[in-house]
Image (cartoon, rainbow, N blue to C red; front, side, top):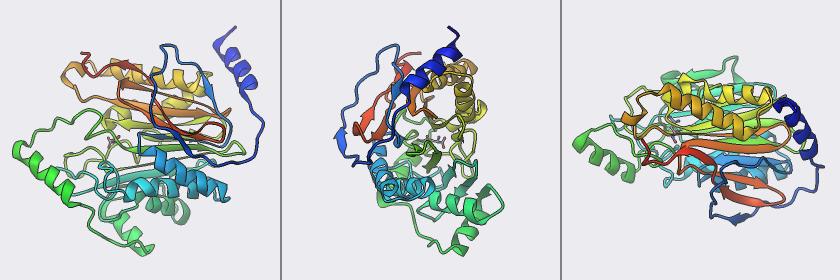
Length: 340
Ligand code: SD4
């Protein structure tokens, strides 16, 4: 049987009846390692998946918003606002690690079932870039606003300008300045962007992504996270995908758009994420000199199947659905951080 036909068969078997919308409490925070051939996982809709541990709190807020009848866009905004406001999350919003000039610069984007999207990049002084990205979608004829223009737009929409550099992040920056060496620590300094994908009870997809980007980046650097097709992409007929990790590597391969296209061709979310990670690995012949090269993808297809895959171990994502609650899952990966 062709893989596409197998896919269609699995999809038919996997489709689930909609059921009562119950609470999505945190059930387990201990991630387990996926077996080598990760099985296709299907969850009852609605389903939310978000990158990294702080995805749990974000998922919870998104779940509550969906439960209260909010749209996918508003539910994603509510969830991502939690990570943006949390100073302990050092790769997103308030408290995010700054660039090499000590400036916190933020990237975010959001996309809905109609392929409407909004994005901001290189935004400074606004705690909730995902909310500004949503306003770009709703209030402008454009998709992306950047830098001072994005800030001016945010202020015109009533957002408040504030200092986002917390004493802890300022201290970390000053420590970094002593050596000023650009060698991101894998899975720590550089890889805590929150990307969230939602499939609602009617099977409609929404996605969002928000980050302070790579710590100690050059001033003005923009990563994959605000770029529709790189850090995030969805096609409501097929599925949704999002990325975390080294943005330059994701941009080079149009990562999230490719994951969605592979799902269109019949690959499962796991297989599609894995294929793109392999491609990124193969495109970076110098990966031995890049011990910080890490990328991770998450994906959902229209049937509610979900999955992820990363280049190196250490990546995890939070999954929330009515049957199994809100929990962490660890996807399969290509290599450990020690592998060359
Ligand atoms: C970037 N992809 O700016 C982002 C970084 C990231 O967790 O994922 N951080 O390259």
